[in-house]
Image 1 (spheres, rainbow, N blue to C red):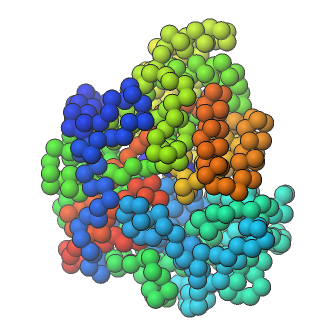
Image 2 (cartoon, one colour; image 1 turned 90 degrees about the vertical axis):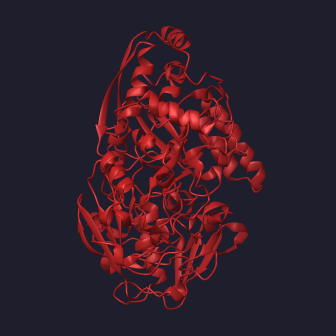
Image 3 (tube, rainbow, N blue to C red; image 1 turned 135 degrees about the vertical axis):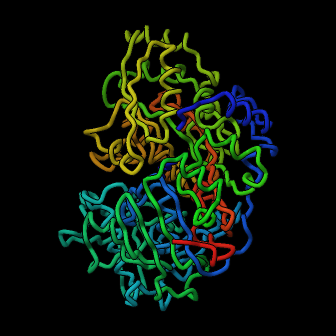
Length: 581
């Protein structure tokens, strides 16, 4: 899944503070060395801040952006998946609401269990719980989940997970249910039973069923692209008001029954999301923790330049979550056109990027590590590979040599980044200039960023984005980022490099056919190394997720599956009477 998180001041003080206080490994040694436990940003790893919440009050979420998509057929960006599936809609299966390793455990949600495989893993059957209802009190039916799975194929409803298209049988040419056509490979023999017929065995389909694609949408509520503004709730909250780019207010869904839901605690009476704020403004407000901000959490990452205001102050640092995201941030090179259709030019880029400078721009070694491979450590035995063994600061002389061999001694290319990543973009720009590469930076509003870079008509020469596993398997990573068959004209998600390579596609199919999970895991690691040699993208960073919470917030932790974002299933307030809004 994609993830989203400036550095106007990539100051030496931030880097010095983060490095001096953390005892982290030298970035030059690569991402293989684990951070020291003394890392100040990691002090609250695996902890729940503020104790157990008290029911009631208003929890405020301060954000620099609107949601890309709340429509469950289109929701595949962190942390929107966390927000949507914990508050507004339920899925067949979900993850435990606990910090640390326990949060990776699958538990039934709308379904009674984790699903029953048959036909050698090619057929999966789920039974819905009794008594699950929508916000109007009507029953949730298996047909509604089938309908949302079908919606995920609609050309207009772009941006969502591709698993249904990858796994379901008989989907070639299917364009969704809006023209009255339905999938034969998703059967609903009755209101509480749904059966998925797959094109190949998928042993981990239970984990796939945690995705928003497997949330219910009744056909009677279909509003096409406008469904984004008002998803029909099957979760503990419903939308009261939604003023796009300004404010979203959620209130309780009185027809949500906690007896059917072992995961969501729904402590606050209301969630108020305030949008369009500047990142530094959000940090300063939550650091101060006055008034309504005492009962606030931040949606987007703490800005790197705020680290000196937080890490040296024990009372503020105690309110900082900075779990590892488990994701790899990459500089994607547009392989579909010059100059990056030339493998030699792409290889030069691997040497030209100054990853050390990007680490500094991202808040220093306390919050970032240099990435040396595509697969994150969680998918490669806890340590990233280092196939190319390039120094963290790059090797501009080698880059120039490769560019000269390709007949491209000078280049001018465009780089698109989300507004909050401008500092990282400038660090990339300065690093590439050492090799004679001129970079023109285009900053895009975070809420529109993935739509812009995912549209082939507006895709830049380079873009900066990350990819995170939807669950612990290489099958959730490499096929989505580097399989050329996943590229779409619009709504292109993982393969932002537009990498089309027949050898890679063939190997992906071979690994997907492996029955032995251990064998498949090693095969994904080996394929990662092979793709690195072809350089469709440059792995840059492994990030933590720095998020501040107000002093009246309780039950806050970074969820391991939601890439370290706050688990909205359990967050609440210490004293609801002190909340405002």
